[in-house]
Image 1 (spheres, helix red, strand yellow):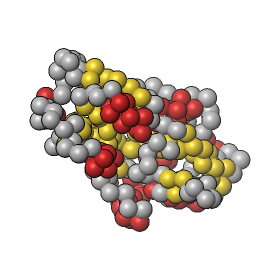
Image 2 (cartoon, rainbow, N blue to C red):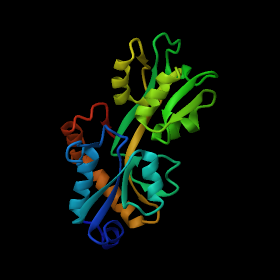
Image 3 (cartoon, rainbow, N blue to C red):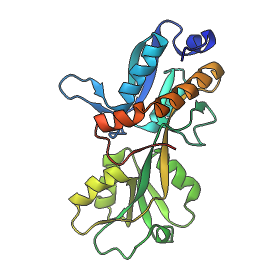
Amino acid sequence: MKPSPAAQGELAPAGKLRVGVNLGNFLLVNKDLASGELRGVVPDLAQELGRRLGAKVELISYPGAGQVADAGATDAWDVGFIGAEPARAAQIAFTRAYLEIPATYLVPAGSPIRSIAEVDRPGVRIAVAARSAYDLYLSRSIKHAELVRAEGLPASFDLFTGRKLEVLAGLLPRLTTDVMRLPGARILEGKFTAVQQAIGTPKARSAAAAYLSEFVAEVKATGLVARLIDRHGAKGVNVAP
């Protein structure tokens, strides 16, 4: 699949592809503490995209998805790997999702809350990582409970435990780790949403958006996304339908 001249010009006009990466999503990207090198599903997909464009890849890391989205409005990157959300789509053209991550709730020991349907009630406070894809979803969906935000996943856990909140919202793979730190805590069965991880490019780059959509369709169909999930042990994530 060869990019059109227009797509090539919009994505890597000077032979360099700038890629916005969310370090907050530890399932898909991790930084090697010794070398500083970024590894995971996202860096590998970025390198594959760069190879097809014949471009050098520059990974630009941000602490959270919200910062990646903000930077897209300032032309700081050419493609960004973040969750596709309506609140971000005003400025970013997204592909279909290449993988999805279930999001659900954790409750402390002794909680009377037994199901996801029981969370959205008056008096329930939900700790959530600010401007994460699931925060944006909950901001649209929650009608009665209170969202209490912290900057990043670790901070949302600390907020939940430190203020003794009723619920912690998060990605299921992360919550399966968090629940082991809290004796008696439970993860509620099911999911309130599945974060759709996609590739975005600034809205005005229509040729780039079209090529990225073809790229995502191909790497899913050929099994590359599935192989990268297995290679990096990204448990709890699935290739998007």
